[in-house]
Length: 158
Image: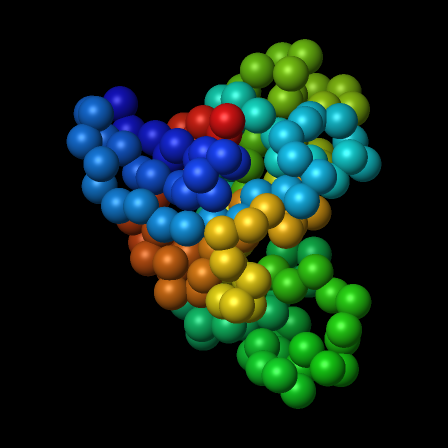
């Protein structure tokens, strides 16, 4: 079985294929910790699936709002212009929960919460949880991961 294993304790994402580590990356999960409730800004636990891959062919550091590229490329000047933006850059892997009552359906649904694995300004990945619920990655890392994984691949967050 091939799946992504995301550890909030280690702030690390690993791609595992039949028990073999393929690749590992540093990540940033939610600053509010783990949890599934809508509006909690927590990273949801349990089994998920990659429901959509968004951003193929976009340049590295492309800015996304509402899962659509804005045409901007992230830079210090763009950051100054939008100081309160939650930066979603380069690629998006949109997750959907697989466990009814835990991370699927109702006020705990990961897809309806718009939980992604996505790029962020690289300096935001420093070993600490800082996101609003998503799993943030450095831009070169999310592009590499995006090119390896497929829609339908499993993701385990713990």
